[in-house]
Length: 218
Image 1 (cartoon, rainbow, N blue to C red):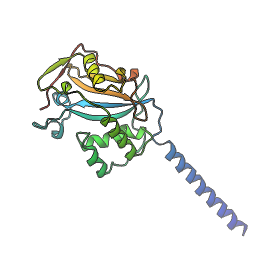
Image 2 (cartoon, helix red, strand yellow):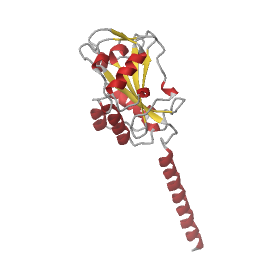
Image 3 (cartoon, one colour):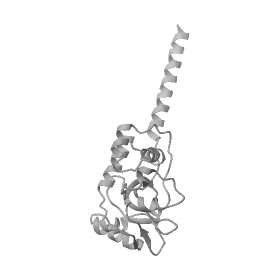
Image 4 (spheres, one colour):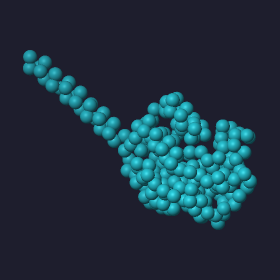
C-alpha cells in the first residue's frame, strides 16, 4: 500500500514538473527584450535592379508594376538591432499567407519574417501579422515617391515627404536605407509596440548618400 502511494506521488510530481516546464517555455518563447517596432518597406524597382539579390518574378517580373512592399516588422532595440530567430516556428497557415500577400511580395518572405522576427515579438502568429497589417495600413506613401520616371532625391527629402503625408507621425519616425549604388533600398517607419507612431532610435540606421535614385515601377 505504501509503495503504491509513493508511486502515485512520484508520478504526480513528474506530471507537475513537466507541466511547469511546458508553461515556462510557453511563457518565455518569443518574449525577447526590445523597445519598438520598425516597419520596413522595400522599394521593389530598386531592389530588382540589384545584380546580387535573389529575385522572384512575382516581385520583379516585367509588367508587375510593384512599388513598395512590406519587408518586415522588426523588433528593435533603442540603440541596437533587435532579437532574431527566437525559437522554433511552425509554418504560417495558408489562410494567413493568402491574406498577407496583399502586403508581402512572396509567400517565402512571409514565412521567413515570422521565423526571423515574428517569433521575437511575444505575439501569436495571428496577432503578429495583424500588427503588420495595422502598421502598414496606417502609413501613406506620397505619389512622388513612386515616380513615373527616374528621380534623384536626398534621403532627408524622402523622409520629409513621408512626414508630410503622415502628419500624425513625428517627423523623426522615418528613415531611409540605400544600396551601395545609391539606389533606394527601404523606407523604415518606427512604431511603439501598440502600433502607434514614435521617433526612431539610432538602431533604425540612415542612408548616408547625398542623393538616392528611385526607379519607376516596371
